[in-house]
Image 1 (cartoon, rainbow over the protein chains, first blue to last red):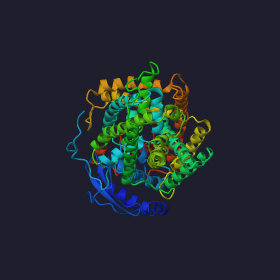
Image 2: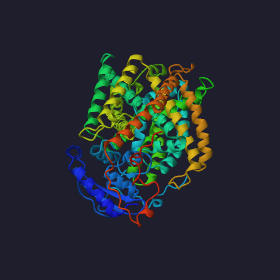
Image 3: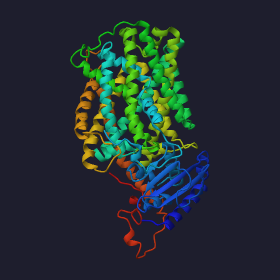
Image 4: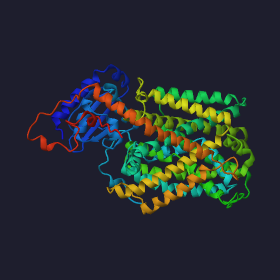
Length: 119
Length: 496
């Protein structure tokens, strides 16, 4: 199980990777969403505010009304935000559960794909 | 059937934008009710003449309610767009699931191609152009649909809902007008086996085709307000399709001689013309074009995202996951368009549009049989609670396996052009598609997965920093945790 410090470290790296990737920023320029995350093993929750493709904040707890809700265990979240796993594979095995439109689910995966195309 | 109350799902997370029952029902009905359904009615009439077609459509609808129950329970177990892969994989194994899913997805290409062809033929007919120009219209339609998809243009949910209810209401109203136009008694009201002992079964099998793809609404499970929304849609949409299709079949059989509609790619225009003259013809043309919005929007979206996910998973060449600057998998969309254009060209050249109906009906019956089998298996393997549980689910699902297998054979060897003959055409197409999918899964997919694993291992080391050793950390490490595991395990690669 990963604690909040590890998640926060992973989220910080993910935020920098996303925000500094110009192709991703261009691709996501029309994508403004509030994401909620739930760690199924620890019960920890956190949020992510995305405005026109830029990740603004990743606070602890659930803030605002979500467009997307992602649930998985804390280890998977950490590996996902570090780019060490392919989210689609976990999703297709039912290990990552998502609530949200199909388009948003794909956009979320597209972020990982654009930043880490070889994962 | 139980467990259909919103209050049973207090933990359901409220999304800013979520899908309610009306939209989900419209999605389900809109995916099912395409222009090819008008030809589906003609195929039923080939086996069940006159008003008997309505009897076949009713029986088909009752059987589809069993399918609704089966998909509701499966969707409750796996409420995700990837649901079909999940429950197939858990029930029959990953490779078989992949081969079946690839075959199933080819129906999307068939439906897009069929709709492009039928709409092209209808537009050409109304404009009085030479037959060869139909293919120009097909190319234009597919070109517009592809361009819209590549630019990320999608129908808003409410537009899709309005379009679907307009098409259904418009078809029903014209059909009612057509029936009042003539009046009199219905012909052959209960002559289900009038064209031979097997004809009634084949008529019912083709009736299933009218409802085909209604179950794709389960791919929107992740945006449903609550799990019962999808269940309600799965039960309401077939009723709407039953009403509209029955009215259309009754009026068509009543007003237009079967010999005329049997050889036509646009029976709905002939009905419109017979009922209200040019106004009726334009009315039905408008509805036919509207069906394309749903077919192209839903079809391209479902299939291209499936291709994207398959490529990301390592089951298709990774090029299919490439995204353009609007986050659209452009190669997947373009490939779908090209495949649809080729199929439409073949249909255009051969005039075998009723074969498309037969192939679609056969695949759908097969999928229903497989879904029933999944429920039989998963009732044993998955004991956890689900929001919907089909009453007497195991015996009903076992009955579904047998029933839909019979209907699979009935349509697989049918010849809608001549109801008194059998044909190996539909089953041959499916055997070829199935064999290609299976060969691909057995021969190509392992190589793709191995290459993906090698690429992931060689590309870079794990980025996540190792956790400092500490007495409190070790016992907390979850079994099977990706942390400190091999790169293959961390990336989730499993080479089968």
